[in-house]
Image 1 (tube, rainbow, N blue to C red):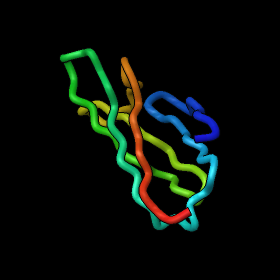
Image 2 (cartoon, rainbow, N blue to C red):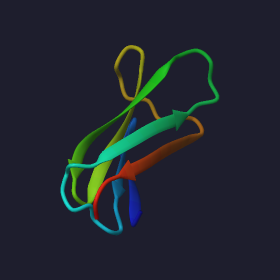
Image 3 (cartoon, one colour):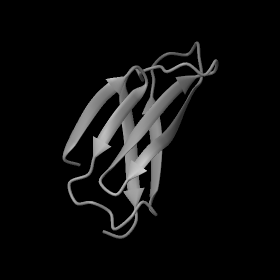
Image 4 (cartoon, rainbow, N blue to C red):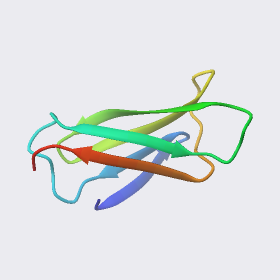
Length: 78
């Protein structure tokens, strides 16, 4: 990972140091949260060969930053 960018509430852009060969790669994202009042889900959007956007949302669908951490791993050809 070359850099991380906090681009909006519940969004973080990951810039990859060594680009994947195409957008045909898989990213798994999880978020850590110490709160117990809402459930969060994590998704990936905006995939390019050299970056992707991690999203965290609460049950109602609005963006929500995790309270502890973002986690991601990418699988594909470089």
